[in-house]
Image 1 (spheres, rainbow, N blue to C red):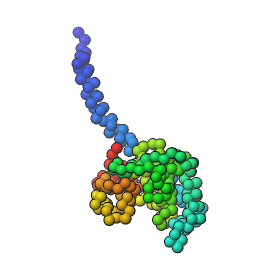
Image 2: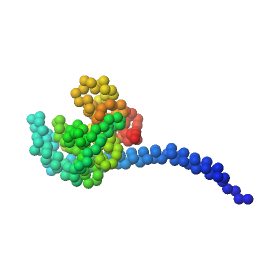
Image 3: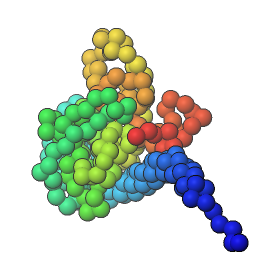
Image 4: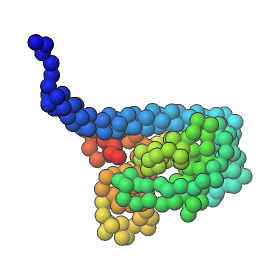
Length: 237
């Protein structure tokens, strides 16, 4: 008599395999998505940093100072800076498609159609050849650079995940870092720019631009809410 598995044994084994797969596959998918986002961020940061260096070589040093004179924007130079910077980013075209951007803790969102380029609200609609989209502006005595690391046609289109803010300081691209936490609407009542004050990057902020200050943490792979954890590993979908 030949020995073999019974039908019941086979079904039980398949059921166990199915349960294990159901438990592990979502984790594997999330880990893969996070790895892709981290890789895209690293690549984008390198592209933008190189573009700033090339722009400085073409236009001279003191980029920020030359964009502002007598406390106001010097438009001839600032327009030239934006044009040269986009060229050095391998700018392809401006997409005609506006899209919705969600904040870091997935509690609020806004449409790029409602805001002008270069302001507080990121509108990264200038497409680069590698699929990244950017937004650059001279405003508020700062040179602001926003990037959607995988472009508007790929998710999650979320601040601190694939959308980040940088600034040009001392002729170098600098990641933005949160400098104050506001964890309730009450704390923001007496703040002038409640949507962006503190450059938030925390799971507890109610601000619509929560995530605007995440690029420093992404660059250094440090969780803004728990220094014992890594930034990219702690992101949740």
